[in-house]
Image 1 (cartoon, rainbow, N blue to C red):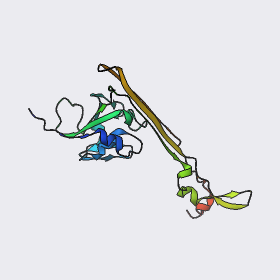
Image 2: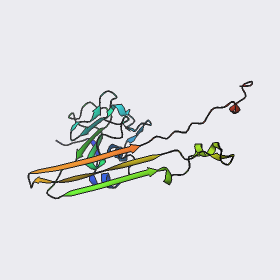
Image 3: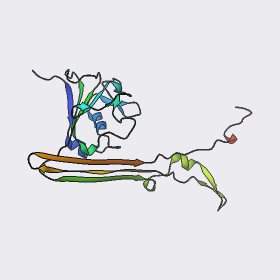
Image 4: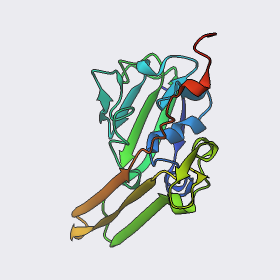
Length: 208
């Protein structure tokens, strides 16, 4: 008659206020005991079990990418559900009941926000630009010939700009009966790359 699962709820206060690079709400599951990062693609391991054995749900519905056996959007896009649309989520790491099947690792079940009798709205905009960044150490170690001054100068900063922006709006359609909640979230990012030309000066071809 009593639950004996090992679980923890990450509430609305944590979701709204904790800093989160990339704005993936399920990354906050790493705050729960027994959770650790699995690999370099954002997977989460519970109790040392591979992240492919987890089950991710939103409002009790399936939120898994079947082909890659991972949370939807985990390593392919930034995220599937906006952080602004998540009210709270529960992380179950062991001894969960039979209603949560298809998992040997952990269960992550999120609850989305809904409208109320009050009007609410918010907007956010985050930016990371090369103007605010230190020089890239790889680019700084390389030099190019400036034809105007006939001197060698460091490579310029590579173009890099990341933007995250969006907002949400909610309120009543029919007071006390029908409500709405709308949300928009977008990311824009370029991926700069630095190419170092290969020349024979790097090694002696007669004595490799």
